[in-house]
Image (cartoon, one colour):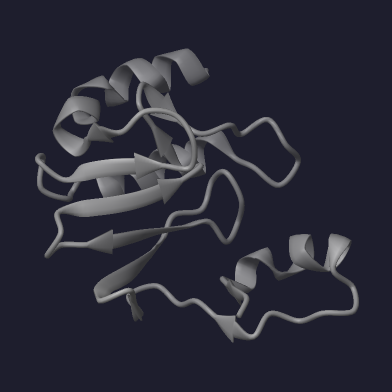
Length: 127
């Protein structure tokens, strides 16, 4: 089953012209997977339809390419936007409890509390 945020549909169609996603993800939606209740957080910036999945019960957020140990994901593509990813991280992720474990799309895990103090450094680096 393919789940996709509708804002990523134009990117999806570039490589999958003959296949539509089976389901659309919406901000705030809760999906159950392997006994976990994952809340969808729309976090555009790396891509327009980027999402993170948060399980408060497990104290975990799966950030994909939005947030890594040491900073935000890449925004050098035509469909990416640095100010938008910073807004997503600040408004959607850094508001989570500091002990929340961040499991990224690749690389080492971190926590919200470890990354939060570095927001201004990322902004300065991105300009």
